[in-house]
Amino acid sequence: MRLDKYLKVTRIIKRRTVANEACDTDHIMVNGRRAKAGYEVKEGDILDVFFGQRTMRVRVLKVKETVGKAEASELYEVISVSTADQGDHNV
Image 1 (tube, rainbow, N blue to C red):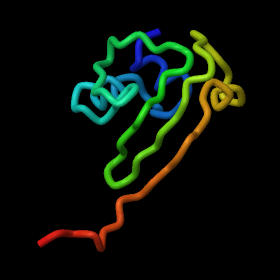
Image 2 (cartoon, one colour):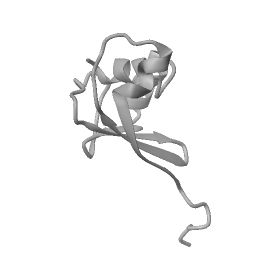
Image 3 (cartoon, one colour):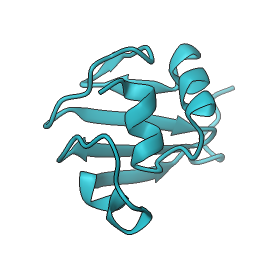
C-alpha cells in the first residue's frame, strides 16, 4: 500500500491529500530515510512523522486497505511521541 494511503487509513493523517503533501515536503521518514507518497509500506517499517514541533514514531504492524475507525490504531504501534524543547536554541 502507498505511504500516503496508509497514513490516511490509519488516521495518523486525516486526509490523503494532506498525507501526500507531507510526504512531498519531507515530513515523513521511513526506516530513517525520507520517503515519497508512492513508497510501498510493509509490516515492520518504522515511520517518523513530523508535525511542526512534534515528532511521532510508529511501527507498522499490519497493512490493510480499509478498516473502521475503531480498528485503525491496531495497524500500528506508537513507539514515541516527542516535542522539541523550545528553550534549546543555540545562538
